[in-house]
Length: 155
Image (cartoon, rainbow, N blue to C red; front, side):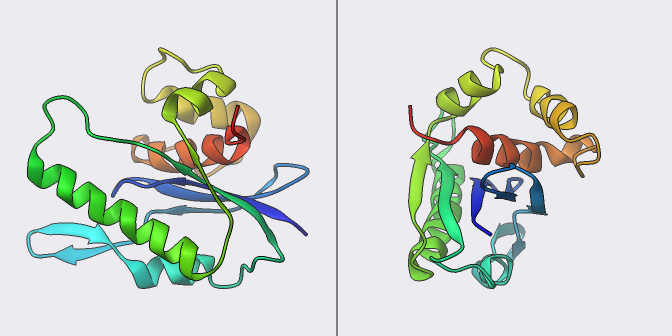
């Protein structure tokens, strides 16, 4: 079975593993985090455990949301986000998996969510997968990861 993986890389992000052909959800996880002083950071070992059983032979593509600095975002928060993003990139690279970067505009356009509220991704995923584990407001990262995987093919 061939799979695709979608990743919303933020600390509140998520990871979705879908079957390539049917787009059936195989696994849905919050981004693994661990304490970093008073804050949190992406846990590289947690990422490795999530990706553990997947190989170049089974993973068709990993789609990672390409995000950048937002106006008004502080230097510390951008540095923290960069660390998280780098942890995801490093894990995917070390496992030898194919990686494609996807802009938020691209996957949101394909999902029909351009201009929609942040929470709209959960509704879209529940329309596609009524039993998906994205029912809580904090599951936005998981829902985004599903949509990144489904609509991640570069335009």
